[in-house]
Structure formats: C-alpha cells, structure tokens
Image (tube, rainbow, N blue to C red; front, side, top):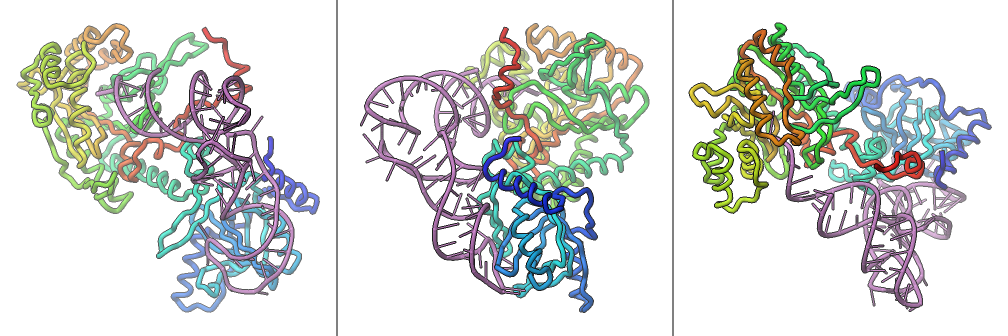
Length: 515
RNA sequence: GGGCGCGUAGCUCAAUGGUAGAGCAGUGGCCUUUUAAGCCAUUGGUUAAGGGUUCGAGCCCCUUCGCGCUCACCA
C-alpha cells in the first residue's frame, strides 16, 4: 500500500502502539449492547426514576473528537445510532488521557466502557472508565460534520463528488447517513414485496442467469462463455420464459426477485444490471394482475414508509389504489391526435407522424413507432400512478390476444413519476400462436438487430404440453426505490453502480492489443 | 456513439493570462461540560494526464482519461 502524508502519520501510530504492547486490530470486542439500546435503556430508566447507574460497553466509529485539556468528548457511531463518549482525567488518569489523544483519530473504531449519564448540556453520554482501540483507520474519512439546527441535522463538507461517492461507496456510506437510509429502504422494499407475495401463496424460485437462448424482452444481451462446454451463454434479460415453464410444471403461482442484464446505454433510469421482480399467476388475467399490483405497491408503501403518499421530484405521488387506468389508443389520441387503429401499417403511421412534424428514425416496424410515440408523448406525462392498457400485438409477442380485437393484446404498463415502472399481460399460452409471433418478430426486425427475439424451441415445446391461462408481471425494483426515496437517478439506489474503468498503468500494460 | 459542461490540498470550494488561496481535516500549543467547540501557531499542491501558444498558462488551443447533463439507443 502507498500512503499519503496523512496516512503515514496514522500508520506510524500503529507501529508505536504495537511497540507499547497495544494491538490496534484486536480479534475480539466486548460490546454489551448497541448504541441505540443504550440510549433507550437510559431514557427508560430516567422515565422510571431509577437511580441505579447503567453500565455499558459500547463500540463504534469515532466521528468527532473535542479535546478540552483534561477532558474530552467524542461522538461514536455504530449501525444503530450515535452517542457521546465523555473522557475525563478523574476516571481515566493522566496516562490514559494521553493515550487517547495520541492513539486515536477520526474514523477509528473504539470500544468504551463506563456508565451512562447526561452531561450538563443534557446529552446522553457514556462516562468512560476504560477504552480500547478496536480497529485503526489509516485513511482519513472525508471530512463531514453534522450540526443540529432546530432538530434538523445540517451536514457540512459532505462527500459530494458523485464519482468518488460511487467508486468508493464505502466512504460515501460511512459519512453520509442519508445514503445508508436509502439502502435500508431498498432492503425494506424487497422484503415487503416478498412478504406480500408469500402471503398470496406465491412460491419464490430461482431460474438460470446463464442462458443458452435469451428472451422475454427486447434487449441486447451480454455474452459470456463456458470454457469446458465450449458454449456461449447469455446473461438473462428477463426471467419470463423460465418462470412460465414452471407453470407448465404445475407451480401455479411463482415469483423471482433477481438481476437482469441488458447491454444497452446507461441513463438516469437505466443501469446495465438491475433488479427485477416477476410473478406469474395461473387462472388470472391482466385485470386481476392490475389489482394485485396496486395492492402490492400499497403494501410496500405501508410497510416501508408508513404512508402511501410520497414526494417525488417536487410532486406528491399517491399510491393509494385504485390507480388511474387509461387505454393506450385513447391516451395516444389525447396526447398526439393520432389514432393508431387508423394506421395499420408502418408506412401510413410514419406518414401521419411526419405530417405532425414528429422526429423519429424512419424505416422502423410499426410496433417500434408506437413504442416511440408512447415513450415520447405518454410516459413523461404520467406522474400519478397510471395503468395504460391494451397494446398492439406487434410490440407484445408474449401477450395474449384481446378477444374480439385481433390487433390488440391484453397488456398493461404502470407509469409513475414519468417513468415506466412495471409491465404485465395475460400470457400467451397457445403454442401455435406463439410460434407465429416468434416468426413474425424475426421478419419485422432487421437481421442484424440484436433485439430480435431468437426462436426458443424448448419454450414452444413447454407451451405445447399446456400452460394454464395466467397473468404475468414484472417490475423494476430500482425504479420503485427511486420513487420511494425521491432519488432522480438510478445510480443513487444501486450500491455499486457501473462506472467506466479507470485507466491504470498496470492495466495498460496488460491490455490485449487492439484488433 | 454525438453535443454541451466539469476536473484546483484528504473533503467542500475560491483564484482578469501575472507570487495557487480559504474553511474543515491534519500537526504543535492553551483549555475540567463540549457538541460544526473555541483561541494561537502551522504543514499540506506535478491545478486529472500529455502536448502547444505566450515573456508568463489553473485560466487560451489540441489530444487522452474520468465524471455530469443531454441526444441517440433503451416493447
């Protein structure tokens, strides 16, 4: 390791501590309770009027040190909270006071034992009888100080540079408690969704991430290789085709929460890997799925936030069911004046779009044009939770026909905060229709279009054994967490978002020659 | 991939083309109830990297790297 000047000073303390017989990285600690437990134990004793002093051994990271000559105050933080350590020469003696001043720096892990009290200014504190180094920090944490103004924590000199925050997320988390809160919320969201689905008799399953044939969405895959099998494999872009095979196998209600990988551009709502929740529900259809979706999100809000109303990007978003429902065709008429039913092929649709002065890439399939209209003119305007339903069949190759409307399928997408949040349909279970759709997709997309859905023969075989009628659903967990934490970029809700690799000299030497 | 912007001390930020600075952190002092503790003193820079213009470049030009915004892409 190479040390900066600041780090060398701390490293030298490690050496001198060891010379004095003190291990700066002891193997064990003797903590009797968490900081939060200590604080509430003291408050309860106070309320009960107990006079017996409470002893405790607490540990955490040193976040502030205030030396006052013969006494010292320190703020110590563990995963549950923060407390003040009160060090005084009366209890510790001159030698120990000197040891504290010489050995300890901000960021070190300290264990302190003593009794709980309130200081003159009323702060709950641990008066130390003894203390010990638990782990020496060599690198100084980014300087950050908290000030409490009217009960609100005001932060000073926080680590703010996004690049450093994402590349060194550990430092970001260590000094920015609001960032830790995002990921507690995130864990709560996943847990609550799981509770909800378990409570509705869904079975959680795990399906392959490495897939010989990718499918279930229109996206470019990552390709990897199995050496021994001499076989290329794809990282999954969705769980859909495997989960529906399980319905064929007799599991009527299944769900999976996991990672999808899409080899596409990054943006404020796209990360190359993202967390998806999909469920499939036998004997249900997209209308039932719509209702379950509202209930699930409301349940998650209740459990995680205790409210169904959240502020997102300056707007109050209300997740209380029922969500607004709008038909895609009508929504497009309202927003653009174009009735897609009157333009049954890409040529006529392109023509009217040109007449309206819309910008788009010419020569696309009709489905892609409609999708363009949708994401350009509809997605951004749906701030309140909205289900848009009944999609053209040519952009929904896995969804079932809407009875009596041959060009349409039973599909809906949920939009919130101007983002697509979830996608669901009544699943296509007719193997012959499914085969025809795969073939159609193959024709309509350019041969070199990597989003083209490859024909999945085994999936068709599964369908041919018979799959019960069912509704299927997928939701982007990252985006849901964005909405519930009022974060406006997906990187804020992913612990280690993908960043470009930094150029390194050693790396440059090892790099394979350019082709 | 295109366009625009940014990169200065460990952190947050200053600096008309003319001696690179402040606060916090650090270091040395003083201080027995502080809490962004305070007071005195003080260290710290290849201004992302490389090249160019200029008497002189953090600032102007070029290249590269990284980040951000945006467009494209993204059922």
